[in-house]
Length: 214
Length: 214
Image (cartoon, rainbow over all chains, first blue to last red; front, side, top):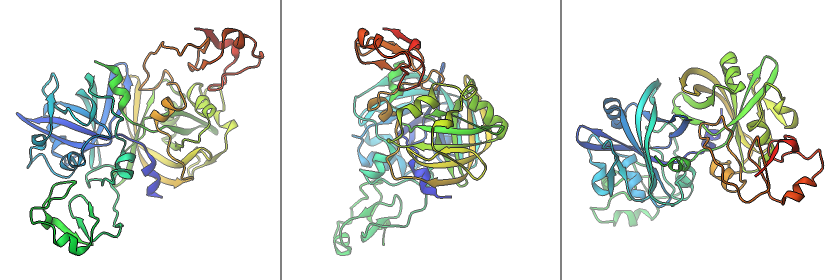
């Protein structure tokens, strides 16, 4: 089997939002698909280890923010490479609440969808949630971000919990690499070491100490 | 709810192949998504009225041909707007068979995947098949066809059985429209009526008599 064949499956990039009691939580996925038109339903596949999975099972609801090509890299990084267990991922972004109170992003998105879970299927490491679409609103006419654009243009990485994760040890000749999200610093070893101590990964915001030489 | 928000969900375009006894059958979908990486599984959502749905349930297997931007319009038309119950859709295309004997397209595709069903979930009008990926091979390096590209560049239409189907009565000022696939003839009423009697829809190949004035 050639795993790279699977890389040709096209998808968008989304932030799923939900609630942990009163707290806003969420994560990045590329697995949203419309499943029926009457009634309008969709499915989304989320790793069982993700806190968002636990919260959707408790609340029975979630939002989908459809990311546009204008979404900031560090927003994808914050939602994709850290856990809502430890961090308020919505603290640094402009967000609104759907009628049922689920958080959605207001900037760098084309719109949001509010969903109510109607069934779940456990599939190895992931849960597939099937949900009824209750609300859907457009926010901008920006082009939707595709997963291909994220990898090809933004040079984004794939979190280990993603359903499409594939081990990749290839580097582009950089000197240091973020151990959390895989971001590769493009300068020399000396340039990296001369960065200030408060330097943070531009993708996932972790400290300089979490970079490793490559 | 603004249904156009759902149009921003990105997806690819695929031909699902399976068997009706010894006969090759198949249909077009835009609902393939990788669901886990260990083991490699994917899901695909197919209308219960599609003959392909019935055949996958009987055989427990199917192929996915990942369409590229070079796929011919009339191939999408033939697989999307007619039924394998009545027609051998593979008769006009170059195809191969996966190790388990499922038909896949050899031209206008980036590769094929062979799948074995591990579970099904019935969801209103559609079935969601979850399947283990058994084989996957690249065929070309052509860019994968996205559903957005199909609508925007090829001006393709959506079959009524698709999960993302939305009623659309808008026309682009054409004179006649195909009643099966929605293709709009771009010339005048007189030009359409002067076409030879054996004229066929360039998208779905049905006869001239199935066009209606708009």
